[in-house]
Image (cartoon, rainbow, N blue to C red; front, side, top):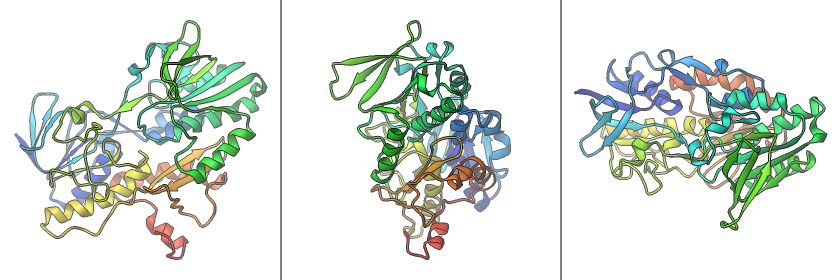
Length: 413
């Protein structure tokens, strides 16, 4: 049986960056990474792919290039966790032993929870920026649009990058204006949520934008069925659960329901009632097993699931887990819930939302980031991808906390 000092389950943003931190600390071969995918994707770029500004290829690198060289890559997937035995079972049937475990398996897309999917993606007008299989369909649907309803959805589950469902809507609005079809379009944002955005400061700014652009927002609308033959989308009205409302569509962008990975959900010792890894919200240490930590979308941390959140979580996890490994007293590092969502509002502007667990803005720049900004768009499109590949995945980027303190002359958290 293979055995590692540190075993990382998952080679996505969280897994790769944390593995890099520990691989630089420990002797070669001490860190194992379980990951079956051959390609690593910078997923925040897919909003721009759906808008025709980037390609899927631009968002991809071979997994072998991004995983730390001193770590051992286990090309397999997790079947189950056995935390009482300090082992992980793989899909191949093998078991791997560990002294310390980091769970970083991400979140599972569940398109099939919507009746008519994924079959409807084979038909015109239906796309989704959340999958490499369907993101190109989004831009194709936009190019093919002539008139009618363009509908953008948000599911009744936790999601990764909660701003993405409306980012593509603002891009579509500008694209339609540039191509002379906006006056023939009805744009709808049908969201399961009871608000346009979870933080009031940014929600207020976004309400102004949707009103100026004559975009209709329908709250408490959950997509439950797609009928591609008649080009209809059926929504459950969450404030009247027994009722549904059907909309015709010419373009339909779907954000799928999401849930915890099966391996996490089925490991009852590991997960909370929600099915996500049960960790302390400040230390990222598991609530029952002191040698297990979790990071990112697979955890039950009550913050928005973004790459920016993972960057901030990474150093907290590293410092706290290192203290456990070295039998030292608890680290002073605490995660404050920092997350960021660059809300792209077109082909050149962006609202840069940054906030903590309590919904308090934690803005990097000493300006009002709720205003649309060309600088924020440039950061999203051109700077953040380079930062991701060159620093973040190498364990060298822990978020903008120090930059924020510097720019605010030490007056910010």
